[in-house]
Image (cartoon, rainbow, N blue to C red; front, side, top):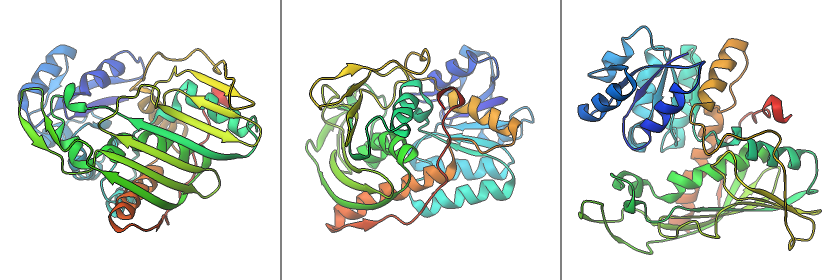
Length: 352
């Protein structure tokens, strides 16, 4: 599958390198509204620097576009690419508003192309192992899940953090554990309650420019899943992960701790009493860290095999509805129903 990147910012080089390392994928082009960023990435990976998105979409070599633009631009860029007859894998979230996210899923279906959506960390070895244990009943009925998305002060390392502060930590990082949990247990039915606050409203970028928050930097949300546990989600742009990180599953017969919802080689531990935890071997030797190309390989395989791809647009749209419900609950101080549903992905063959 020939792949092109739209957006050459902070994460683009990691995608490009992961694609270059994968024999089933070929990176053929890049573009960015900042030409110097695209030019540098194109030189580094010896691919075409397209002057514009339109130029890139006119390149007949391009099968799939990877949308790495800012969250505010995701829906617009994805829509243009789908209309051009290209498959798309978009970074999270697929859109900022549920109606837009759902419309993109429907647009892809009408156009006869695929829309794959990050985050795809449920495809990782540690995450698949945790899911296998849940499916096999190792924990009994899972009643409660704790999800920690503490991401620290991102301006301390991110070159352009204001676009992420504008959407807030639930949208930027809370989306990861929410996608994993709904992938494992199915759809959410209600956001029961949410607390949000500006813990540190005044910030300074790496170049010394001060800015003020546009959204709360601290959230705690309680989310009820239709066929699974009650979830407590914490998402912050002020607390570094430290000891408050990862996912915990608590069932009638035991507990499971996934130290990272992101890294495919995350530490995984189980306990029968909630106090003494022991290491759980993963279902196979894991990729070290995050393999950014994995959802693209999964997409290529799904197209070739004529089956649904696992990182579906319908699932991503459902998660966007949860994100919207979190904000509505925070602003209004009341519970918010989540009405959309999606077909849960199947486990990876090597973890089934």
